[in-house]
Length: 523
Image (tube, rainbow, N blue to C red; front, side, top):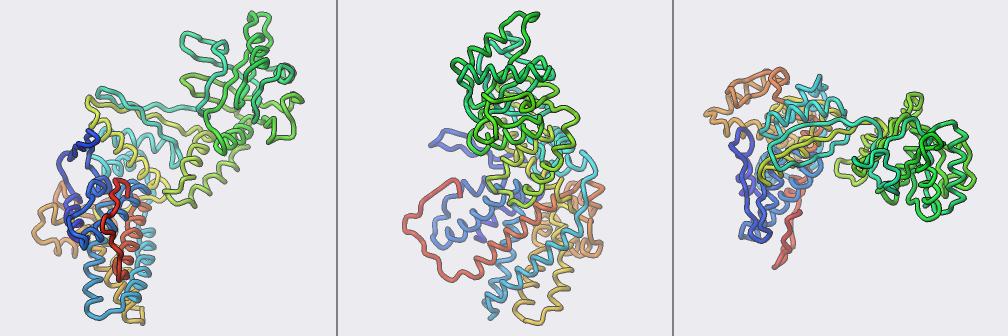
């Protein structure tokens, strides 16, 4: 584990350009620009004793970066310091379990100290400064800072790649749903494959619409609302029902009572059910079929909802709700936001909730990035995805001094707690973590060529938060003023991952090593 940590420690602080790895088997170039990807490429160190520690560390860092998008190298350095000092104390006679108990209790104290240091972001420049800690692309960081500021913590980001140098963003209003149009005859602009309805009635169905009588009932209900258009959102519209709708839509404009747009959602299962429920809130429409009390055949005017505008194009339905409905969906937004806040970052339900919130709030952005070569495009896309996770965490939890300084500033609180602990080995574990908290900042000083890092560590400790060391200027600075920032929630996840991994390594006595272990690029 220590050997692998030594390989990654130099990634803290200033670096050159990205390192590229060519996979001969897949004939693909992979960018090694973060700790998790670098570790994923290491399948063994040639010795079972080394491999066991390396794979434990590999799994810890991979899961951390999948969860929060950043912090892998910091976790490695912190974990190494924790294990090295912990092993020394165990070798000297300390009880491993009591030592681990002290380390975990000290971690809770450090987390509380980080929360006290945390400050909310004040604008897009602060968000862009955080994004720069994830990438070496100032232009992309600035765009992501702007998009995060405008879209909010729960905004949904779509990334489009181009085969030439390109960087642009687009903001989309209204609720967006992937969908397919049921007939080309519903296009109001056939040459652009686009359909637009102004102030239409809205019918939501959870069952396919196939019977002509059911389609006629929907048309009569829509006419009774007094509106000139009808959106039908259903799993499918086909057969005699589709013929009736197309025939009505193709009437000359002066004789046509309704303009029709029928689409089927791409989502299936629970996600489609959630889409229907959210659209029902946004439009006021009842869900006709199995989920609701009524069916399409018995639909009345009051069963239909309304929208300010509906547009279909590029297999995407955009619905803009009427202003009067906006206040009615705030409860749902608050409920979804609360559920999202309680979920772990790697929970599979998070993307679904994020998309639902984005639809309800209109918070959707498209990031358009490009480069001449595939590896460069992959690099920018990967950096953007990781930075977006970090910026979402920043919006929720705020920022602290970057460069490892925030962890250093937690040391005094941990030492104070250790001084009040009566159990000797538990107090010793707390001091072990307190010592390890200096490791990330120390490593950055070493990587920056500082000959006496202990002097700067003492100076930073004396100044307290938000002081940090800026490697680019070789000076101690106010991290908040200089934009040298880390996401509080990301740093807390780093600390907890390092403590969890360190506790397992310090307390494990025996590991069964397979003679031919399975190799995997996904830990």
